[in-house]
Image 1 (cartoon, rainbow, N blue to C red):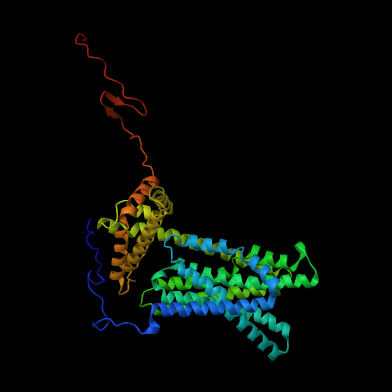
Image 2 (cartoon, rainbow, N blue to C red):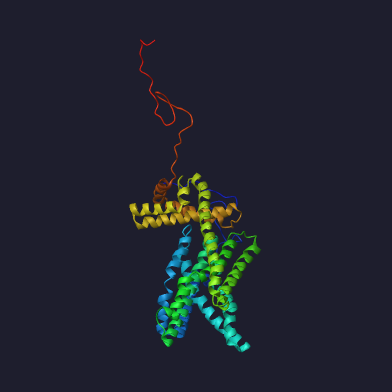
Length: 450
């Protein structure tokens, strides 16, 4: 069996093989029962399930059974597209599915429940205090709802940032977690709005394209399915930039997420308040703010994605020199096209399980590149060496399947080497050749020629 190459040390980390004990240097102690992983996962799952049952009952009571089913069928239409879009952004360093499931469930259940309860209570309190229900609805939609809803959605990003810190390493992670959370929230909210619109049409007898249901569907599903994700992504970007800060930059780590949250609230308030700006206020806000913001954020996340690929190509050659990676792997791992070809090659020659193994190899190698990039920038924490060793061992266990696939992908995607004719005569076996002309042979030897 092949042995591992020499360990690649780092000046900020402990020596390989060093055991990590308690902070005081004594033996490790078992955590209390409430700190165990299965207890925390069980409590969180129970909380989300209970929130889901409550929000289901509230929405069904508000819309009726028939309206709920109609709203559910229409509200689910944009969800696969939005989830696929955020998953595509996360392809460079794919996060675990459990983070996405938690984010969507939090948005659809917990955040939606908090928003419905808090918004209803605040609107009723304002209506009672001012004795003006119409102004209370307007104030609730433009001031209360953005604060409550964006705070509730931001809680999911904060939880992943605090408790799944290993999976939260940059801007794209913040964008994906925030976007998926907002997609879940918009899903539940769309059920409520579309179900109520259907109930209104049932009472008035409106049908077809002129119905309230059709108008609500056009505005919320066709024109602005990205509205809630767009707001919350600003919060996610704030957390993502904070994740890139060092431990000493505490002010930056605190203010950036808060600034992103405030921007999300402001844009949300502007969007909700567009209905009070006249007949064409909605379209004016849509064209002047929503579309440009969507374009800028789309450019930002795609640019960040390309930057992450460049980081992979720049950081992994050090591990190739040390023998942990093959010479061609840094180039292949820094190209999404080469990665796809490597997985296809593994699937064709060894089956789906081999393709999944190559995918995991690519993910571990990307995490390793980002880990070393943070260390070079002075942002490594105390567990750098331990995490680096874990990732290297995961790569080494999968190298037999991954290396041939990545080498094939590197050859398949390598840029062609241009062959340029030199600007001087090329001398061959039989003489000199001019530009683009074959060399003329020497005349035959004639001993009688004078």
